Length: 261
Image 1 (spheres, helix red, strand yellow):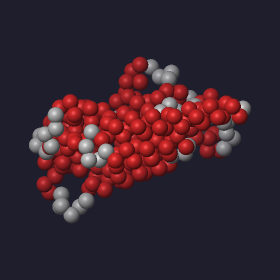
Image 2 (image 1 turned 90 degrees about the vertical axis):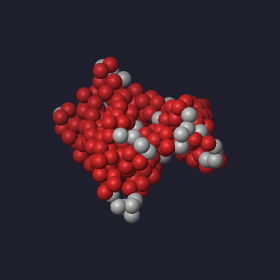
Image 3 (image 1 turned 180 degrees about the vertical axis):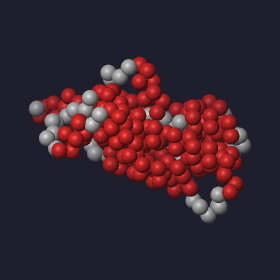
């Protein structure tokens, strides 16, 4: 689903809010630190989520090197859990790959909505953005850009890399800790609370338009309807259905807006 026209810089309203003026006055290094500080609350879910992955991956038969390979190279918690679960179920390789891609399709939407804000970045910078783009760094950055649309490119990049550094490094460290200390963690400590809370905290504030709500509702209904399909393949159907429904509603909304103009 493409970004809403109202989220693009050329459609952003100029604000005289003192908070906006303070944001534009920050140096790139201050923007980096600001991004790190605003990421700190997510540590409450990133750390247990990462530890849980380390525990689950070791129980699935992976060694430390493989666990860290997942967390450092893949760097995508939901798809990592999906892959490990399917590996435990002895699912075919192509199903594991397709399921991981389906779970990560949202990254394509994240990237599309960041283009209006970061399109002038260098190829190297875009490569790092692609690598460090996770749910939390996206959610924080896009909301920051929309609140402060007159930030310079350097300020936007600095803020993004501040959030990403404060989120990605703890994820890697906590995955290693979970793999190393998994057997010492009592069974009555429910680390699995982190996954649903993380996504609820990120997604709920972003459901601001009919297109967002439609995509969310259709994806949820599709996931429930196809939950019985083997090896998590229901996600391969539910995710595209949600995106298609959201795109359709957004197109209808834009057409209606143009007709009313």
